[in-house]
Length: 307
Image 1: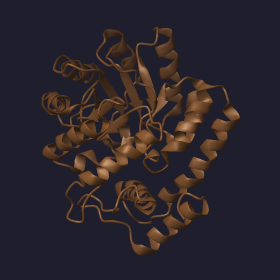
Image 2: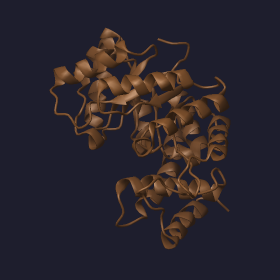
Image 3: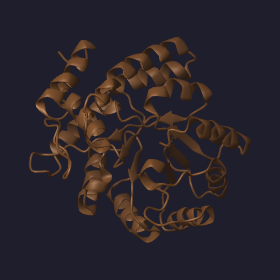
Image 4: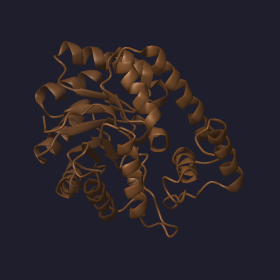
């Protein structure tokens, strides 16, 4: 498939920002070093947690280039090329590949209304236009299409896609995907994006996880994954409970959009830990207010994550 093995904990890297909304590359350096030092097995640049669709193509390519420079080949980089047509995905993807991405991930078509055969051809066209492995990103909450297990395994058997990042939240579908993939000889690498059940997904055969919360607590996810792979499910469950307790930070903000609450809470904890210098969000999103920030920091403090 490539020189890299894709597995384990692959965080969707947050995009740190300066107060004026520009990318804070010094903070991005710190974040990448923190994640790699914590033992992660790969980096997913420019997913939902990286606020990919709030950034210009120029910024997205610059982010991939910077992550690749800091990473220096230590772990594989999967870069998100989220665009509205196969042709624009290919254009952006090739710029990211030139910048250092080892593989590309993209969604089902956005905005357009397609049947399953057309969705399949969307991925086939993209794969024909790039030179690295392609991952399918199953995230129906954002693109309003669910990628079926049979379609994904068929694309895997054809060599169109190398793997799937499943953020559907549909664990029945993911279980079926695992079964179909097994029956087909495992053509796909299967990652769950359901970060509160990584222990369970490891138990039933997932190849890895792409958890946003790893941006502020990567080591716990790595301990969880290592324990699960060693058959020590008691430790895996213990680490998952700790992570889930800490994940309560995303439920603190009230009356805000989904994009503002999740990534906003992540950035608050990251800033409190000194991983990044600011919890600034991409426009038009606004940062969390002082009262909400204090409540989030209390959760992290009570769990010993910050002092």
